Length: 205
Ligand SMILES: CC(C)(COP(=O)(O)OP(=O)(O)OC[C@H]1O[C@@H](n2cnc3c(N)ncnc32)[C@H](O)[C@@H]1OP(=O)(O)O)[C@@H](O)C(=O)NCCC(=O)NCCS
Image 1 (tube, protein in one colour):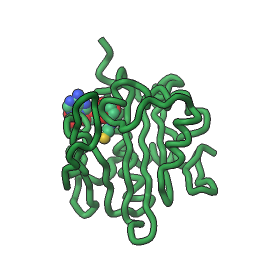
Image 2 (cartoon, protein in one colour; image 1 turned 30 degrees about the vertical axis):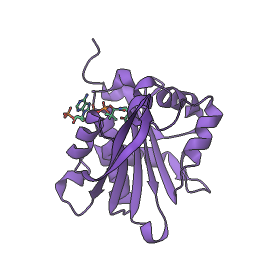
Image 3 (tube, protein in one colour; image 1 turned 180 degrees about the vertical axis):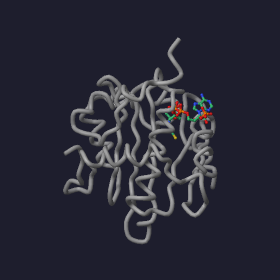
């Protein structure tokens, strides 16, 4: 059985780069991700996946990959909005099935929250989660996200439909959202090896 913990030395967090397409395709095409988090059919190719990911509307994007022994094991994206919504960001999160339950999702969420709160100065994070995705909802609640509303028959799954919730975290809600001592140095290291490209995308330097 896989160990519950992952050795910190084996896990690297860094900005998403062009070399990550293959690993991200594997993550987003995994049955577990498709079932729990996707409104799309599997991507046919890296190019199709990249068009989707790059096409997410955002004023700025902060995309972090978790890498273990050269393999992409997790992804987290923060997409900030513009103008009268420049205080808010959308969140996407996913961990490869065999690496779940080892703290990677939580580590990624810590980094997104630190980015949103400390580096970007957002006031609100929001996301959509399928109503039967207990693991994700538990994680989000742990970080202070609250359900704001239900989208009925949000996604088709076979012959059935699944509802979804919008969950949000407001940064005036206290301690739950504060970055811990480990997260900020990790994030600074990741950011030091990165820059914003001409499209406002956070990329490996
Ligand atoms: C949701 C997801 C990102 C969690 O990532 P993870 O690396 O497995 O999570 P962690 O090991 O960091 O666990 C963090 C917390 O999440 C919750 N959690 C994780 N797995 C859980 C499970 N199987 N059942 C219940 N809660 C769970 C717990 O609160 C856990 O904290 P705890 O162990 O202290 O109780 C991961 O399961 C995943 O990628 N699922 C498929 C894609 C997906 O659902 N993405 C979210 C779309 S909205």
